[in-house]
Length: 331
Length: 308
Image 1: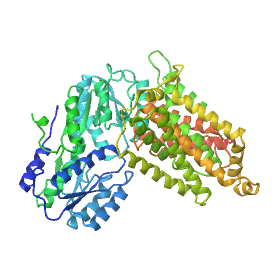
Image 2: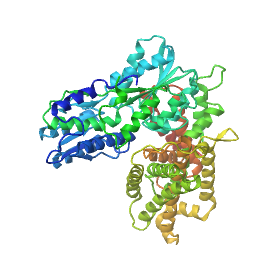
Image 3: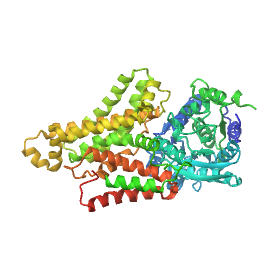
Image 4: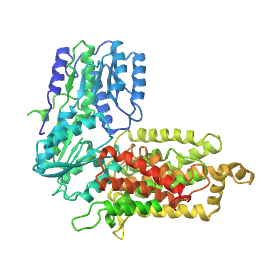
């Protein structure tokens, strides 16, 4: 791993030891707790891993039930309805990934007022009264992705950027980070930005289009992994000439590292969205005061460390291996 | 056709040149890439044309495509042969279409509501079956087909689109079924009085709508080599736009499948052209909308029925 836990993991561990709930060995409470987790939508594979993480962590703790609720498609208004029904159900905690920061604000505040510990993960609502936000700092990680692109291109040449849905708060912030990182390098210029509307097929055809007019492109930054779920998405890209760096490192994207078509994947801790949501809600429930932000670490996955990442991923996915101190992550 | 030709000439004129002075737009490779990119919408638009000419609407096309993608990819990764997996995918899609048709024909429900329900049902079924996972690592011969070429020039999904278009055109113009579909869409009451089997006709039309959406789904899996229940999200609007740009009347009775495939080409070429021209992302969506409306408006003012 080029980068490991950035504070947050250690931080949460410290909180939990304060709260006396470290590891899976804590004594089960008399009444089981119900934690509701509300991702942006059901139909997105990244949240599926978060769900695995949350359920595994809940099983390890022994007295926690996970309620998984989300709209079928990304829809802030539907999330508000879901939150209101969870408040009526009097759940013991809510973790939500917000489709739109301001639209969710009132519902989050209502849950807090009703005495339900509520946090955000993956996508924040900074002006709400949520106890904490667990997830990456999109601006910082955008800068990191941009810096890696500068490094891979040697700081020279024309580069392009691919985004998903125009106006999505987290994607816009990531792009701003990439632009900032490029700004300090006069030899590199961002010549084109394309948006694929979170659609893999459209992403693939846009890469074809851009490579057609700019065959000598020095690099690409994808602020989401859309095209890399498909095979052959980078066929028009000459890997010797064009360096590709991308957000996310889900299993279908790994072959691109193996073939060298992609130089670097910036992996969010998708399993930990679930794991840490459970940990943080439990800490809050036990009276621990949470900080406003619990920034999550990222893993920079490259062709050289892919084997290690693959091992880690298998452990995260394996129901029999509990989350916790991982020997592979020790420096 | 006029819109397509004028767009082509315009893009040839303004698209950047390669260092050798060739147009980046008007060259065989780019045109074939563009055709492959819109072939999925093109294939699905053949079935949608039938539905719309019959006086109906199918909002479930994108979701049925997505369900087909999931069923086919899961069958393949479970070790099924290509033929069996493809059959399973097409069967699922056709079943969705037939369910639409049965509810519309026999229960008398409005097509808009029935297919809106199916939009949600098929998408939900795909999510439930796949558990929200991305299905990757599909066998090479299948993916080889989607990424392959006929005579190393024409991408195979484009060949399938042309075959689907031909089949659809023959069906619409040269068969009793095709004429009956036109009659049904032109005036349903008259079709009933004329003794046409209106209910079985509707069943067939929506069943075919599902089948073509399924065929588009098969090509999707073969081209992109992965399955996810999110495939084709929101594509129903692109399919319906293609049909309308192609000159088919939304009130039924009139339209051609060749027009619809050309309509899909207009949308595909527009998207490609904006990328080639590096139109800033902020205006891209806006330009697409304006050009689509202008295309249809220009066509209507000309007094012709459509693009063909």
